[in-house]
Image 1 (cartoon, rainbow, N blue to C red):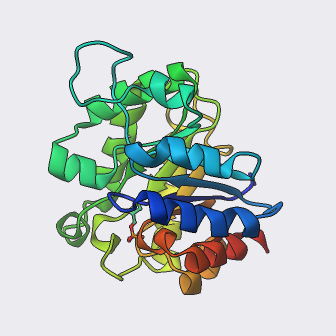
Image 2: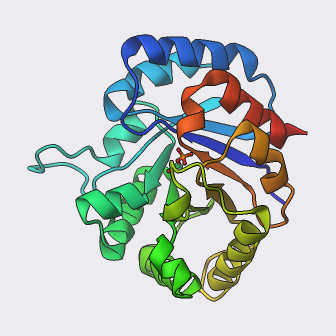
Image 3: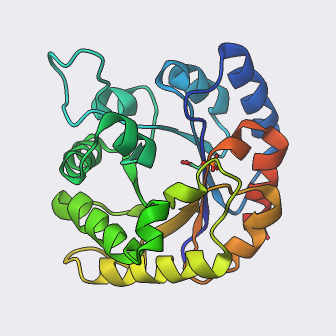
Length: 248
Ligand code: 13P
């Protein structure tokens, strides 16, 4: 199994002061973690974050990127720019982007191709809503998102998929380790059917109300290779405990 990966998605939170405080605490605490660690602050704090984690084990990622490289795309940020300032990861297709910004699987696929071309490692998010789960469609929804997002996948060496059931994000409701494991096994089997994807080497993160007190049992599941953490990544002690749960 590959090394676990724990990623903090700060969403639209933070200020120069909190970035300095949070990362100051994390950098001194995260020493040879035995887990890959990345944090994804808002765009405006990425440069500050890259400097703050320099020569530490923490990498920096963005929460989204454009599907375009440069040009007349007002308000967009290109993956080339992100790589240039020191970002190495990018979250793509988060359910909040799909929900509030109408992102389609086709757009996620285009962003993924652009991100890989620029040298970034993408973290592709998939996940079903409560209604989709209750109507028995969770697996087919996730399979469709995967196939749709990975249609331009050529050249991805380190594929990372984050399974984030929409009903578990920010709600305090977590998929049970068994529910998450079942979906992760499904995701791996879908990846096996996509030519050119190394399903075994792909890392499958779980996201949705991951906390210090549920991380260990999630990480114990065979197909859970890490976590994409929202709210708990804004509290250094919580995030560090989640990283610690993956280290042991
Ligand atoms: P929470 O951990 O706050 O539920 O958010 C999960 C998430 O959306 C991470 O991308």
